[in-house]
Length: 252
Ligand SMILES: NC(=O)c1ccc[n+]([C@@H]2O[C@H](COP(=O)([O-])OP(=O)(O)OC[C@H]3O[C@@H](n4cnc5c(N)ncnc54)[C@H](O)[C@@H]3O)[C@@H](O)[C@H]2O)c1
Image (cartoon, rainbow, N blue to C red):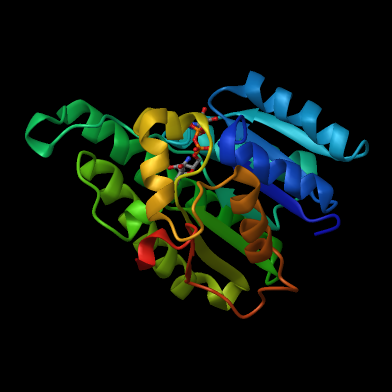
């Protein structure tokens, strides 16, 4: 990954931050985007502890807004000289409620950020990659095991995470010809602030007992497979795929 120019959305905390730290350790140049840019600057401070010479740029961006996403990609192209890879990680959980009680405005927001936002990021990034000419490019979209299974009390989250797999496959089919691979990573329950919104601490032992590996995931355990899929040397013939990283939960 030495010198590769990678854009990570949702880079301010959680899984996005872990991906940035892993990229720093591999010598990549990283553009960090988040609605909360102060948190991106904190991530950059942590990255400098991993690699004092790491090249970074922090960008404030709401991925659901076209003008923000267009400006974000333009900034990355200007500051890093182009884009070799992108991780579409930013997302929100929404509310936990049965469909009959779920607020319509939250459902709309879920679609806007998680589906339209991811689609907009892919749209602008592939345009930039096409401009750069045929190459060795990779896009990784963060879905969830909620994109594979049915979980009660958050149909909108399940819907958006399933949709990300559909967009991933379509983008892989369309842009393979440009040397752009597009894959999805599907994390299981991972230790971030989002986890605490859907898993009360007292329910964690039950979830861990159901999981073959008997524990929840650490963010770095998502970051490493993401870097594998970004790396054109290691995953050169993999595109349109869904990599489940859930400690085996979805197979039992
Ligand atoms: N934590 C888990 O258990 C888990 C499991 C499966 C999938 N995921 C997915 O992984 C991704 C990262 O989750 P996390 O656990 O690190 O969550 P998190 O809430 O800790 O971090 C999400 C980041 O996205 C940013 N963000 C939110 N809305 C945004 C927007 N409109 N524009 C730009 N940035 C925005 C937030 O500011 C935050 O920094 C999400 O897509 C999530 O759905 C998480």
